[in-house]
Length: 234
Ligand SMILES: Nc1ncnc2c1ncn2[C@@H]1O[C@H](COP(=O)(O)OP(=O)(O)OP(=O)(O)O)[C@@H](O)[C@H]1O
Image (cartoon, rainbow, N blue to C red):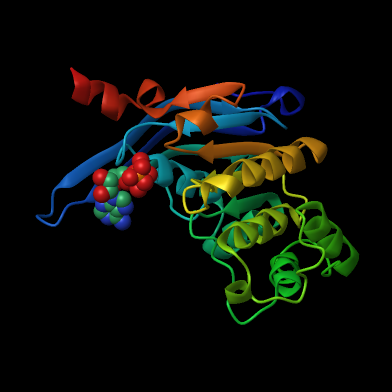
């Protein structure tokens, strides 16, 4: 199935398959997804038991990992056809990623971490925008602090600002609240969702938390779209 460009979803996965090699040399199928789409600006949560392939799916959408087969179209581009360097550039320009473990660069300040994210993107680092984003996540008074001088909730708020910095089309968030204390979990989630809404960025978020999942307008239970898991259940 092909979509005319103007009606195409922001993200289209088609016939995506991914296996890993087991220590004994055998193949371990993880994903077999006939179709999965996300519209521009849509907010989707992905749930499913541990080991069912949620992180693998995010890595394939981000182009960090390649599927064995299938198309991954983002804004019309099939990223599986790009070279590794082209894929890295495409990701830097179009996709923000929020990790469970924040992945901030420890030697750099909050402001520098956001600016560094911009250097891999479209234009020059925009100090005004970086400061505005950090102010928006409540860290206007922590611009020059390094990650170790920030609380874990503050570190995750820096990574939310960093993910939005390049005006991406899509943000992928892998358990972004799992390592944040409970008093900051809702704040991080709200900042991420509001930031995406304000800038019309689509959000795909993986979580184990039912409290987080139920706040989303669309909940995708990975086993429902993944034939590997539906076959295993039989
Ligand atoms: N590089 C790899 N080589 C071999 N097996 C892998 C590799 N990466 C992941 N796996 C396996 O693939 C399966 C899916 O892993 P994945 O991290 O995507 O699951 P998940 O749903 O995100 O799990 P969790 O909720 O526990 O984070 C797991 O069984 C894992 O052991």
